[in-house]
Picture 1 (cartoon, rainbow, N blue to C red):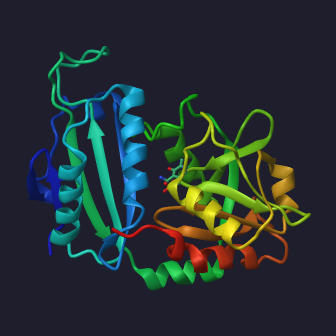
Picture 2 (picture 1 turned 90 degrees about the horizontal axis):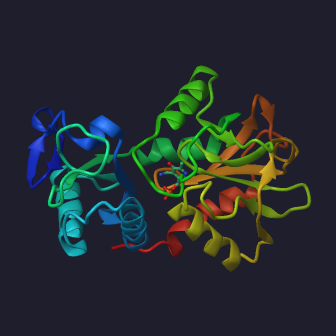
Length: 285
Ligand code: PMP
């Protein structure tokens, strides 16, 4: 079955789904995106993802291409046409098509909208979670507004390629002070030596992960000691546990950092319990 994409008002097989060479997403990475988990045919945490999308658009002064209700219909229709029960739906909005020129295009230029969906092999994901993943650390060379979910992801591409070349699944990005900001496509967490669950505070230097925000709720419900503060690579090496969160992986245990095993090198109890309870706290729609 050919995959179907929504592109600017039409549902098309991927081989015919195209955007203009003058799209500002292509020319300048002038656009934003969202990735929402699909589980049992339902969108997970759609409300929060749409709120973040709104914020990304308004921070970059990109016009809303359609109403929230219309976008909700398009996402569901894309999921339906691709027969996705468990997977992800991906949404990209750019500042539209215009003659190449750095400043914003003329008023009235329509933003471009692309929506795709794909299935995930849940069993494979569960196996990965049972085994845990390796991460490496690399310098965080991104711009200073990574709280905006922009499609300008070149530093993330390079970081994740470095991870792959070293047999790891994720790269943790490290700021000039030696602190881990987040992963190339996930938020980073540890359980510290003294048993505290720790993740970087919100601000302009991390993406406000939707999974991160739900995991904080799960942690509170579980009565875990939790602290939002930056942690260093050294602290992570010595941690009891480490894990990453993202819509596509939920809670994924980290079993090694830069080739050093985290604790005994097996997924930790805290990460596993947060993963187990996650979908009781997520919103399905
Ligand atoms: N940080 C970055 C840089 C990401 O790309 C992602 C995944 N989109 C996340 C964090 C996790 O965000 P979420 O939980 O909303 O998927």
